[in-house]
Each structure stands twice: as C-alpha cells, then as structure tokens.
Length: 179
Image (cartoon, rainbow, N blue to C red; front, side, top):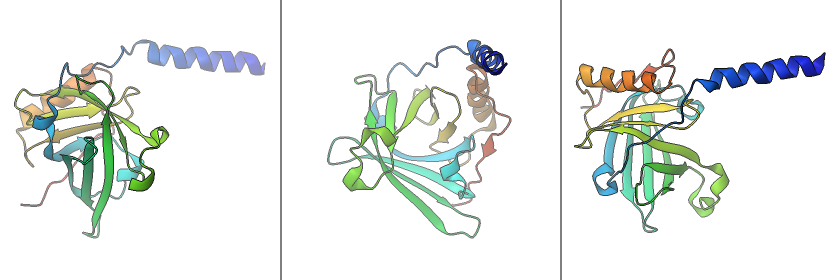
C-alpha cells in the first residue's frame, strides 16, 4: 500500500514538471553593461526578502577577485534599511548569463555549496530591464534601471515569465518610493 501511494506521488510529481521545458537564458551578457544599480519592480516571494517592504535595490560592481560584488538593500515596514552583501560568480563564461550568488560572510564566501542560481532570462538590448530567475522557477525578479518603468514593458516581461513556465499568482509588485 505504502509503495503504491509513493509511486502515485512520484508519477504525479513527474507529470507536473513534464510540461516545463528547460529554462533558457539570454544568449550573452556584457557584464560591464549589467553592472550598476537595478530597482526591483516585482518578485516572487523569497524567505530572505520577507522583511523588504519597499525600495528594493541591487548594486553590482566588480570586486578585487574579479567577481561581482552584490549589495542588496531594502526598507522594512518600520522604514529601517536592510542590507545583504554577497558575491556572484559567473558559471558559464564567456556568455555570462548564469551566475551563482552567495551571501555568506566574506571570510567563508568561497564555500560553493551555499550559493543560489541567478540566471538572466530576458534582457533588453540597452540593459534597462532584466528578468532574473532560476531553473526550478520558484524564484523570479524583474529589475529595471528606472524606479517606475513603463507599465507595458513590465507586463511584457511578466508575460514572458508566464510563457516560460513561471506561476505569477503570488507575484509581489515592489513599491519604489525613494526619489
């Protein structure tokens, strides 16, 4: 009985994921154009962003190791600035569209097992808007160089996310209030 239930669960799980095609990234990312400040426009819920109520940003710069320094910031419900510093490692050079990001303390950041996938799924040619996700389609971020990008463009990127298998029923639209 137990093995029958287990087998049914496994078959059911496989059929849920069978219709999802492998996740593809953009063909190539010029990192020097991607660096800088990005404003989060929307995201799927993520536990380490639970405290983020508004004004979510990510700043990417090259660090002394040649990797990408990540400075994520947001404000919580009480208006207190929250900050997470990390490092991103390109895992598919020279295409640069797949990265692993870790937020461990700098002294132990070299440990590769505590890094999350950061795949650039859609990026406009002027590097003004980016859709970032990961292979399981659990996490997703829509980033823009502007705090308040054009609504049609936002919808285009979110519709693209749906078309590649993301469920957007729980999408969070980020409030950007900073001038």
